[in-house]
Structure formats: structure tokens, C-alpha cells
Amino acid sequence: MVDLAASFGRSAQAYERGRPGYAEEALDAVGLPPEAVVLDLAAGTGKLTRQLVPRFARVLAVEPLDEMRAVLARVVPEAEALAGRADEIPLPDGAVDGVFVAEAFHWFATDAVLHEIARVLRPGGTFAILFNQADGEFDPPLPDAFWASFRAGAIAKPPEQTVSSGLWKMPLPGPFEPFAEASLAWPGID
Image (tube, rainbow, N blue to C red):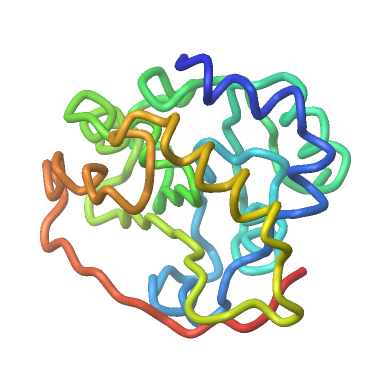
């Protein structure tokens, strides 16, 4: 695991407080039925997991970082929290109807990971990648010191580890076709 990605474990509580949830409309668009078994891959503290639990019959959440997984297990006890990584998903072949990755795919976007995701999906299964992106100004505005720190951190990351580079799309569609992309308005924050 990349050292920068592993650093999220040191700030699991702050991650839980600061990350927003996801647009329900985006989850609706995936089109999986309520009886589906789904996987939240790289689940972090369970921001997406908690939205999947009331929608689907069974929710598995795979997270490599112990600290993040501990928060996940505490805040979403209805999900099955498992230790694992995107390139070694601890599930048998064809175990799930859907795989969701929220705010993490850019960390491990490779052909090998796409094939591992395809391995755990049932035939006709769905793979969904979700990102939250700011669109417009923050209200109230964030201080200049925040933006200076943000820009310094963004510059320090290799391009393949940023969402904005678009490099995460390179291995797609891989074994998944058709590949579709959509942007949805999401004004809410948990």
C-alpha cells in the first residue's frame, strides 16, 4: 500500500467527521434490487456503507486499514467489515451483485484490480465508482490557510493518486462494459 494511502489510518476519526456522504440519486442510478448482496471496497469509515445497508439485503465492507475498519465496525455494525485490499478481495468468485468504490479508486486503478473486482462479481453484476467533487464556492468560504495547505498537499501527490488527474480512468472499461459516467448535483453533507 502506498504510504500516502496508509496515512488515512492515522486520521480515521477526522476522516469520519469531515467526509460527506453520497447522493442518493447516484445510488438509485446503479439499479440494483433490494435483495442484492453488495461490496463497499476500500470502505474507509463506512460513509457509503451506512447508505448501502438500508438499501440492500447484505452489505460487505472491505477496508485494509485497521483504524478505519474499527470506526466502520462501530458506526455500521449491520455491515460485515472485512480486512482486505482491492487487489486481494477476501471473497469467493461470484460472491456479490455489486461492487461500490467511493473516493478510493484512484489509489488502486489497475488492470489487475479490475480483474479482481470482476472475479467477485456475479455474472451481470454492477461496478460503481463514486467521487464527491466540489462545484462552486463553499459557504461559508474556507480560509486562505486551508487552500494553501490543500494546494501544497495536492502538488506533493503523484498524479496517479489524485482524482483530478483522470488517470484513474485508464484501465476502464477493462472487463466492464459498457462504461458510463454521470455527474449529479449533491448539496448535502452528513
